[in-house]
Image (tube, rainbow, N blue to C red):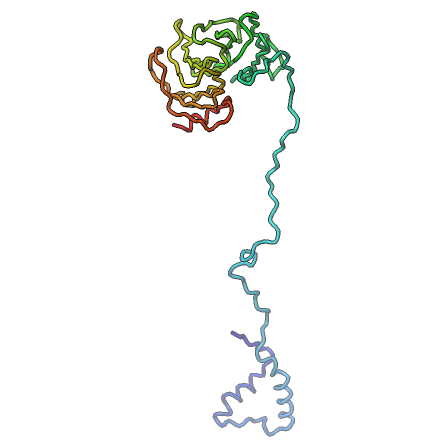
Length: 291
């Protein structure tokens, strides 16, 4: 659509050419040569300006911006900071006298942020907050060395497995011996796992025993599946209903916590034989995936 600019138009002449000429009206200026010349010059001068715009037309708006129709040439850089992975340890602790045996569990970190480590016949507690070191216990040579340690969930009580098949229960705050579990195994106790008041022990004899630390006759159940070799890995599920055990027979068992008598070993729920070496490291979350 065009909007004419009427500023430069001769409206009288236009009115005559459109209306008057058709009705036979005689133009009073037609006889005058001067008028004819003036009329011709005026008409020719304004003929190119009959249709004009007073203002420039607006720029058309794109329905869809071009930047959305084609991918950008360069992707925007991510503003997420890069994670720094340290190449060196934050702290190195000396461990003189630690027993060089893969099947033993000689280190455990408590819920109260205390590291317990067994060095030969002694157990030491290291506090990272103030870097203090406390000697918890040193046993006799005929009973040692220490073969496993495990904190309770309260971060105060700790179980210490010995080479003579016993397990000692200690209070780390008062540094006092609370009790000793005897008669369950026929060899060293290489792995421990806590389930509230139940302390599960795994021995070199291939037996797994549930011990109720609150009572004198502490053996409340046994699991028998591994061959007469070290049980080197034990872990309860987050629900405390299932137990995973690994041994140097390359087998992983999943057990159900039940009320069977201590005289009859309990049957396993799952048996995994895909490993080609001893199964020592087990995650609580892995055990929880089964049920």
